[in-house]
Amino acid sequence: MIFHQYLQHVFKKNGIRQIELLSQLQSSHSIFSGLDAITLSRWCNNKTTPSYKKQLLISKHFERDLSYFIQHIDHPKITKVFLKTYDTLFNKLETSYARIGYLSIDNGPATLSMLNLTTETHRKLFGVFYKHMEAYRFIYSKLDQNNVISQNCVFTIKQGVQIVSHLGFVKDMTTFSRYFKKKLPTQPTANSIVINVGHFSCRNYFESLIGHLFNHLVDSYWDIEECYVATRRADFLTFWEQMGGTQLLSVQESRFVGNVYIVQFNLKQLLASPFIFLQIQRTYLSYLKLKQHLTIPILVPCE
Image 1: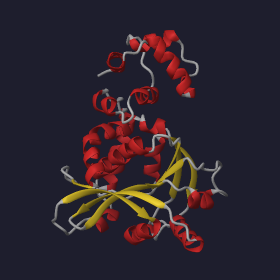
Image 2: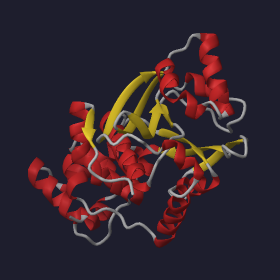
Image 3: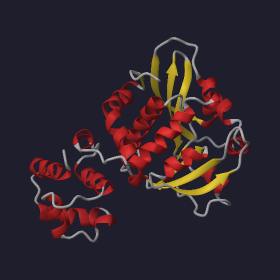
Image 4: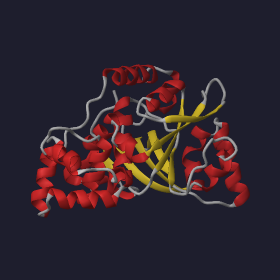
């Protein structure tokens, strides 16, 4: 479904006219403050198409959960340049020594889980992974000194009982702000999230984690404006920058770890990027099951 067809659908369903939508959009978000009747008419008649960020914001005006939009709208085209970057990144990752430590010897079923953890529980589960990164050692030490408990939402993929891939985010910016305030050119606001450095056994698991995590952000954290991604390795930095991110900081780590980079996004812009939105669409129905059960089977093999 192309966007003008989506608009015709919501007009009919909600009994709304173009002139009424124009007034509502102008008052709902600053990005539409200069929207005029001619431009909206061109969108409705398929003469022009708004950016995917604007499409998301318009659809959110009609749908709290974006269910119809996510399931029916045509996703934006992913460029050949981006696909080349992505393939090169995972061709290296899937054949690297770093992957060996996460290969499971357990032949049990693969499962995906969504966990809400305190920082202490997060450290117990993932401390071995993060202990080699000076940035995270500092954060954990500050938590000890100040008795701060931050909530971490983590998506994990297990093979049997062994975690083989994970990706998560933290909403509480207090500790991250303390660590980065003297280094970042801009101070994170309270209405921000940080997506942590994660580990991915293969591209299939990475895509699954990305899709479910960003579905959760759409579902539960729509009002967030700023998004910071902590990522490791220069090729992952390129990956995030090609989706519109701005590098704010490089934390020098050991040669084994590779530098940790902090990349800044507007969350709505990131959600609308072709790669992210495609993963949101692919995992939407699976996310609804995950949201209900917290753990579900993974049907896509890690090849």
